[in-house]
Amino acid sequence: MTEVTIGNGRATSFWSDNWSGEPLRKRWPLLYEVSRRKNRTVADAINGDHWLMDLRGRISLPLLADFVALRQVVLDCDIDPDSEDSFRWKSDNQYFCPLCRCNLETPAHLFAECPWARQVWERTALLFHCPAIGAPDGDDRALSWAVTTLEASDKRAASLIILVAWEIWRERNRRVFCNKELTVSGLSHLIADEAYSWVLAGARHLVRRE
Ligand SMILES: [Zn+2]
Image (cartoon, rainbow, N blue to C red; front, side, top):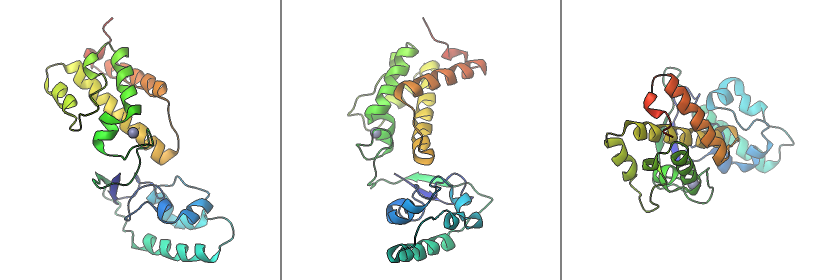
């Protein structure tokens, strides 16, 4: 789980990210349920009181109390148009990995231990004939396999590690922010496409060895 410090509010999900102690959809599930726009960013929700106009349905008494509490959170939120939102990992997280949905989300889990992410690493290793980036050992909590490969002189494996980790992170965000998801094979193909555009951009060492 990540904690967010709000800057301009443009990279943070109003309902789903942890920018005020707990994701709003977990703290006020009734309000979340009656909101017809669940994907707004903090900037978008607060600007023009969109979060308020998104609420639909009859306002019951418990909902009214929630509403007042949420309004306070919105009033307390300082948007700073000149700075970016900053995300940091929270170690004592209680939240599930959006990729496999059965383990808690930590950096080591997301990039190395997650069974879903491991399938992506494996497929990419096969696709690029690059066993160095194959599924890391499940007990390897320190991501030492990635560090070892990044430090080795294999520029191609190092680039692939960065690319795969980046795409896993983007998939995680796609699920959290957009309620959309790719399959393992969908993401692997996206990584392949992305690798070829890197090649076009000059990273020729990524070219697949047959
Ligand atoms: Zn997972």
